[in-house]
Amino acid sequence: MIDPTELANILAEAIQIKYEKEVSLENLQVKEERHWFLSSSKTEIEILSPAIFYALRTLSGVSIADFRSEWGNLFREEDLHERPKSKSVFMLSKTKKYIMKTISKEESMNLRRILLSYLEYCQVNPQTYLNRYLLLVKIHKKGLGTPYKGYVVVVRNIFRKAQDVSEVYDLKGRLPKSGTASKLPPWKLHSYRSRVIEDKNLVRNFRLSVSSRNEILSQLRSDFEFLCKHNMMDYSLLVGVAKASPKKDNSRLKDDLDEFNKLAQVLLSENGEEEFYVGIIDTLSSYNLKKKIAHLFKSLIWRKECLSTIPPKDYCERIIAYSEQIFLSADSKYSK
Image (tube, rainbow, N blue to C red):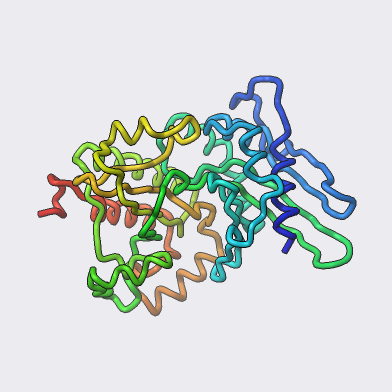
């Protein structure tokens, strides 16, 4: 793995590319456009589709100065994390506005394949819950020491505005492979707050006002259908729960967001005591031959409802139905 301090400085350099002319969908290219630079004689950096990511950063209100200050010379041990299951490494920026994450070559290809469509979708849907991709670089480190060749993506942190997230849920809408949900009593929930909680240990729902529930379900449906259209599956609905500030209502919550966070997806609970931070993450897995083979063999052992490797249409329909069951309001049928 490349040294994290070096990687942070590379990201700070990569953001410096400027575009004098106005960027529009008509003059953007994906495959042909790239920018090369050498951060040292032994490290070769390729910035992929720089104009499109410039447009995405502009759309998200990310300035060059802010981005550079977040990454330059900042590395701290506590900001570096590993996900053993996916073998990826991710790092938080200085004030936790952004997340750097290593991704596979296949994931980088999937991102570039949908990039123009993704940009257009974000323009039409400013309140989308999809991951906000801001930069994609390819790194090739040669010479002595540990060589490294891989891809790094930068996304906006869903929890960047949260003061104290006490619960984090990574949800795919699937049943436990045992076929029944775990019966974890609410009083034991605190023991799970040190890690991410998955579907099998979900023992609560997220209660919203009627209007907030209608809005989030409508946008989530649109987002999931966008991913389905592009053959994506195995993504997650990430929900963070934090205690709400006293006497804070929806309008006050929105007013509190600064310019960068004006698109932050924060919802106030029905009783006004909690804030829900919501986003759709890990959106770059396509239903390729490898996934199809995995689905074939796993379906011989477990029911489809227990699997994440299922066709995009089935995955989309399942997580839409699941969202309707976990986001509740006074008038929802699951509340009765």
